[in-house]
Amino acid sequence: EQRADGVNWGELKTQIQDYLETTFSVDSLTTFTTQAEQRIFNTIQFPSLRKNVTGTCTVNNQYLQCPPDFLAPYSMAVIDTDGSYKYLLNKDVNFIRESFPIQTGNTGLPYCYALFGPDYPTFPKELTFILGPTPNSSYSIELHYFYYPSSISLGNVDSTTTWLSDNIDSVLLYGALVEASTFLKAEPDQIANIGAKYKEALILAKRLGDGLERQDAYRSGQVRDKVV
Image (tube, rainbow, N blue to C red):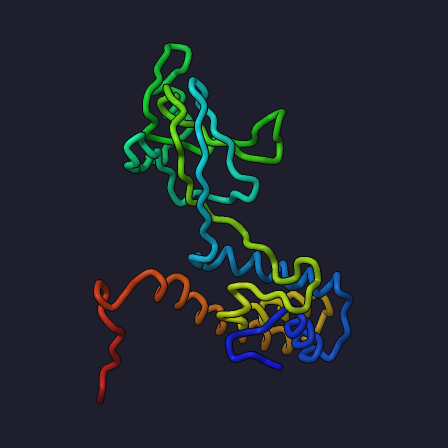
């Protein structure tokens, strides 16, 4: 039964196949969906795409490894011994290298950071941060960052839902249909119609993720339409 609050993976698979009147393999349906999710997540910055972790920096080591699912930073803070947060400034690697050369013993409480690059050769697929100045103590670090949440298709469990499928499933459906119709080499007018519906759904999703979820009536006021 269709729920008012969205769809699960089993329902989404059925909708895609019914809409295009085609039976697809699970692998193909998974590909269509994950491609759509990636497209959506890189178009709209939903708060559900934010994650935070805490870790500890190492004394006299200016590098800090990123989480495995890290894509981009929102903020980084040093948590002092008294529990206070000191948010670091995002700088360029060159600035930190030049301003805080570690060989001169230039250590202290970090106040800036940069995305350095892959951690060769230990973790060539993972990124690292560089801190400035180099930590002089094992400070606690809190990182807020952008990541991809687990796909609704993960494990092919029909009952699986995600924040996206629960709250604004239309953009997920039409995003997957764009990928599926392209795969089928559908008629140009059908691809255009699906693309137009996807853009409509994307506007609604963007209104939510980049608009309503970033304000409130107290600070921003309520939306008002002129009455004529």
